[in-house]
Image (cartoon, rainbow, N blue to C red; front, side, top):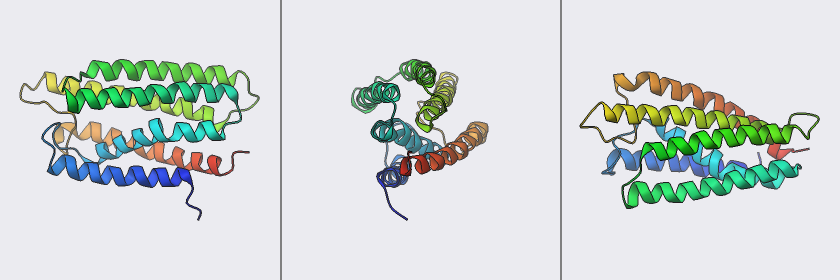
Length: 197
């Protein structure tokens, strides 16, 4: 089986998931412990939001899709830098920043998918992926609202993540369901990137 760039990026992200999970639960002084489904979700977001767009730009045969992916990818790179600085640098990150960006990203991707689909005779995986990503942003908005709401109602809590506790079980099960569906889609996207024509 050929280990292409897509799969190398996937393995890199998966390695990062295990390293981050170990570090956050053993050494991090901020954010609280994290359940593995949440670590995996973070890895999937990095993979989908930062690593896949350049591959789609390279493989896409549609100029409109390339434009959408370029704009999205540059926006996500900017967010990654700003969020890491506000989280770990000056510790001034607020959930509303992420929620606002997530909502705008979902709207932008849905509009982008609509704009691209108007010029095509058949649906294309790189455009379907825009819709999948928009759904991911909706899920991420739900997750961010959940932890923000939890922190607001527990004065002692200053969590960024959630662990295996009974109160968080529905959220974790929902996360697992999202991940199963997303991993299935990513497997299909891998087939497209190996044979885009």
